[in-house]
Image 1 (cartoon, one colour):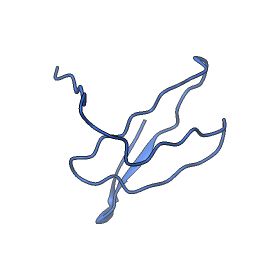
Image 2 (cartoon, helix red, strand yellow):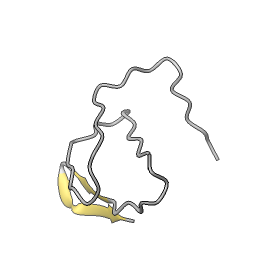
Image 3 (cartoon, rainbow, N blue to C red):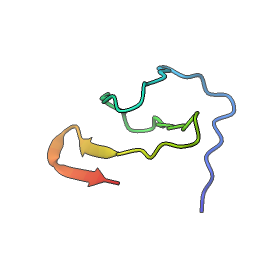
Image 4 (spheres, rainbow, N blue to C red):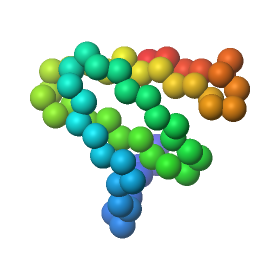
Amino acid sequence: MTTLAPQDSVAIYDRVLPSRKPWARVIKKGQTLRIVDSGGNQAVDFLVYNADDTSERYSA
């Protein structure tokens, strides 16, 4: 398994979301999305679409 360690990277967008609130944003090729559970008790509903072909999607 490859571990990503963006040591020299700078966040281009940083957001803290309240529980049970939706969020949407286009993540471009080469960008990294990091999800952190700051409270330690939440599950994340995660649904991803290909911005160029929305029939291609992933749900976890």
